[in-house]
Amino acid sequence: MVTTVKEKLGRVKSNLTSLDSQPLGRAVLVIILFLDLFILTAIFNGLAEHTRQLTAPEEYIPAACREIVIDRSWNPTTRIENLAQLVNGANNNYYYRPQPVQRERHPACSPYLDLLDQIKNDKALATSFDERQKAEREVQELQRRIDQLKGSYDTALLEAIAQQPEPASEVDATRTEFKQKTGRLNSLKNSIAALEETINADPKVAALWARLQSSQASDRQALLAELRSLNFWYPVKKLAMQLLFLLPLFAVFYAWNSASIKGSRSLQTLVSSHLLVVSFIPIFCKIIETVYDIIPKQLLHKLIALLTSLKLVAIWHYLIIALAIGAALFLIYIFQKKLFSREKLIERRIAKGECQQCGKHLPTGARACPFCGYVQFSNCPACGKPKHSQAHHCWACGAGQTKD
Image (tube, rainbow, N blue to C red):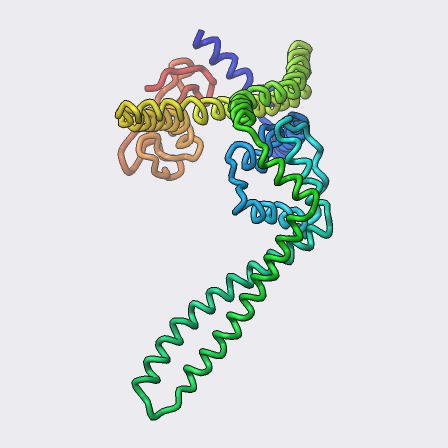
């Protein structure tokens, strides 16, 4: 079975790297690589557009709905600030963005999100929220300055007391600025209160507050259960949607490649082999991505929680160490035994005219290495002429030889 797999891989490699039993020229190789990159990019772009038709959990149950129904972070103290961030974020975007496709929303989210959309589209409300945000920023800056003035005023006052004969001009200047800042701060707070009163009086905002007050714990539990289910099954549905796009393309390239090989059409075999590999890459990547989304993000979290509860979390770290050692051994084997093996090294040394034993460059016509003394040639058993000692074939007759 292993031999069969190696033979098939060898044929695939030959189909990818040769044309009419000849190695690919540089110009052909560049054309093939550009074609591979273009097709791969086109596949991933089409795959993204195709997958975008599937409604994601964050679209079916948006973040605002989760905050309102599940987290319940929109209490009377924070609700205006939360609403202001949504409205200002939607209206203060200076870059053009195409209107997103309206997705299906969860029935428990629709009443809140519909009201939020109406509020975002109200220009008068948007102006009120913008003015409130500016006033809030100025209030924060004034408060910081007032706190600094308090410290400066106390220090200057003590210095003025210690130096009675001298005028306390610094104390007076600090007191004057403190009064000005405090007056401006009170004025801004009154403006913010008036703006919040205007916002709360708007029918759409009042309807949203009423909806928040009437939210039920049963809605929260139902939405939370469905969100968990969506997060678990969405990667599987996404993979099915992606394979629906990728598998027909892979099947077409596979059929073309098989027909080209049977018909001995070398040019079509070359191109179809590359397209077959290129179309397989997204399939492999998406399967790995789905496995990663399901196992580490779902099952591994539960496994770590279980080990932590049993006070056996050290087992997880032992497993990580073992996996790292296994991966290192595998990579060392691949690089040392396959990519940089002794056989590959000898081939490169013979091609470059170097010593087959020590790798140093040989003088022209040298039959032995002047550095290590290794004899570079031996007689071919088939034709009797000299051949490289560690070469697979004789360079005179081409007969296969075992290495001496």
